[in-house]
Length: 92
Image (cartoon, rainbow, N blue to C red; front, side, top):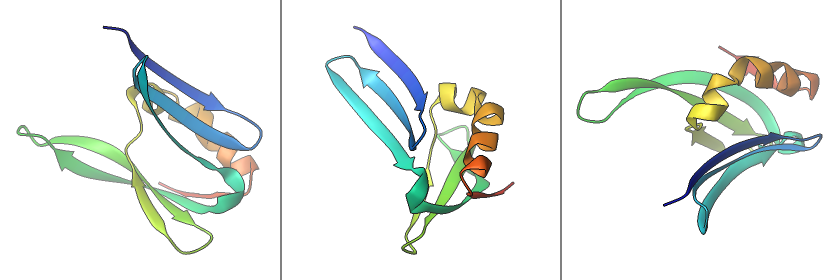
């Protein structure tokens, strides 16, 4: 079994690709569609482990709760300044 995880930060969007090599799951967003990102927490699993959720508010009013991959989460401190440069409001 070949599991993969990749986070790509480009000039126009950020994406994460996780899952099996032959069946990847790709999530992310284009900077120009996002108005704000708010960090919140939630509990998951039987042990009620606390995880960080990115609550993404789009310019069209839709809100998405985004659970980042471990790789994305470990690099949040590098990703957030890029989002701020693109004019996205960040609320921690």
